[in-house]
Image 1 (cartoon, rainbow, N blue to C red):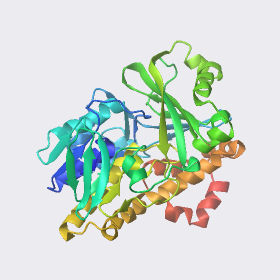
Image 2 (cartoon, rainbow, N blue to C red; image 1 turned 90 degrees about the horizontal axis):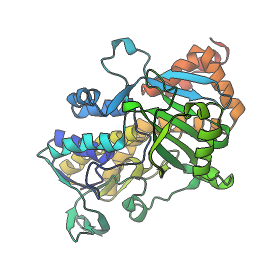
Image 3 (tube, rainbow, N blue to C red; image 1 turned 90 degrees about the vertical axis):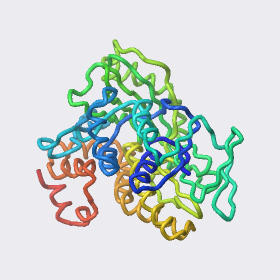
Length: 404
């Protein structure tokens, strides 16, 4: 049983169906439903959709509630901008390397594909109340009074996962957790013509950032995120800082002069993947935010959630073939997830540490604007190129410091 029909859970269910395996996926909401998020869909999302069904990428590209995005702009505390394309070879691309769509729309895009699949039993509007371990796995108890028996529980129920905290024993640690505020606006001026997402590392938010992501219909996803321990240490009122940034920051007060907020400001938590955790055990696996796999630098979580979903599906197939759902068997899921993601998460964590020193981050952005080696390296991060060997090469650092 998969608990949570967001991107991670949906990707897992769809990939299981591709492997010919039936599953039940349960969610407390009825879709479409909103989800507080930055709404950016990275190249990993496209990668996962291609693995499930290449036609899904065509359908996402034609999705009238989303837009294609070609890159990201990093703005240093000094105000200097570094525009980084998501791909270094856009000429041969059929579609943009990434997309942006409100979660209420993208999650429903995936759920519609769950509904249309005969191997997937989707149960909506049903909240899980409790899990009881037994010799056959878990008895999953819903608030509605329904009980389910699951040989494997795949927890994909987000940052506030009750399974992750109560059963798997994962603890939220302030220095590996972030809080963010998100609001939707209409008519924000100066959004990028190629729909680059913007990460502004303003001094008052370090090591977090203020973001501005374009959306369809002249709307924007605007927010701010700061690590939880920094919020407490600096005694920051996040909502107040958000409003002050929009109203008084030299750049934003102009860009928001004629903008209109749609709805209200909403708070959300982002458990960061800046440390390795045990994300499986006897008869369970944790996906995405429930497994605390959010990128520590960019805050991106959808791609990692979906990637963990299809990795889980592959390991579920192995467990079923061997009829072994023990912690020893499910641990292969941890190995596969971290083999794919850890070098990237660790690099992002180091970049997050860099942001704590504004002068150093200013230097990196200034250097990247004049140094093709560094600029290409940052672009490669978004193309999911394996950087480990490159960072072990002394010649790389020589080019970084002295090259152009």
